[in-house]
Length: 362
Ligand SMILES: *Cc1c(COP(=O)(O)O)cnc(C)c1O
Image (cartoon, rainbow, N blue to C red; front, side, top):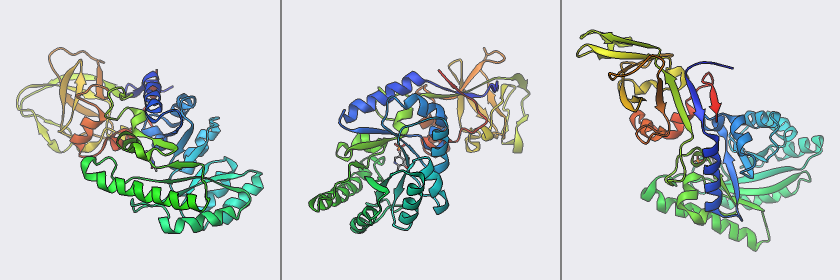
């Protein structure tokens, strides 16, 4: 057990409420895949998978290693591997029965070989590029890839999917996203005409789920929404990043604070030292920009954020070892608010929380 004062607290009952909300939104006839890549968006890979396993149908990770960690923790749900992998990962994928997304035919022989070796039938999902311009096979080449997969006895083409590039861009992304959905639907129609039936069809990420009901198909891939970042008020952030004040003191007018002297006290100033820094995932670009909450008061961050420490201005009534909210479920200070100040997206704020910060689940 790590007793560091800097910690992340994760609200599991709210997490399960978030999952149930999305389950109801998509309807009982669709499957729910929870994306737990990047340490479950910073919330902790294995614990989040464990607490989700009775609420979702499938899990998705980015890397083979993440999938292996889930299997070694005893997670039995199907696990999609969303990102690309090397040929040398194939024995591990087969051994742990992970489900890769494929977008070319180069590895089919190897998938089949190792599936046979381990005595399994390996499920595969084809990823189609309908406009994202990243991984995925072009729609017009999909049918030939499907035919190739079907030549292998130990491979089962379980799914076909695509990914949206602009579903979270509001109005600006509507035409583009609708076009992606149309391209995907046309491909599915063409395949159906040739009696090619693939049981699992998926496209939607969180914003697809929220804004494009037509994109739900038979399964949705829920990421950030599960962790509470969504426009639905029933859905609430579940992570609170916290620390405590470890030193309280007053510095005289004209004194600098922290490296580079990026902040100078305009008057005698009461400051607090926090044992958290950019190595914990509190981004350095927030130096002199962000604030924390102490007893409900907004306290500005003063000067440069260091690797392991930072300095804040303090109000009158504070006490040593008082709790400090770095961000969480206070509407003034969620990962969205912090992301605006850091000129990034909440995904980066959440996934930045590093390995050395203990996660506490309640
Ligand atoms: C990360 C990811 C998701 C989840 O996206 P959110 O916006 O967090 O819901 C879905 N699909 C793929 C392919 C992804 O890489």
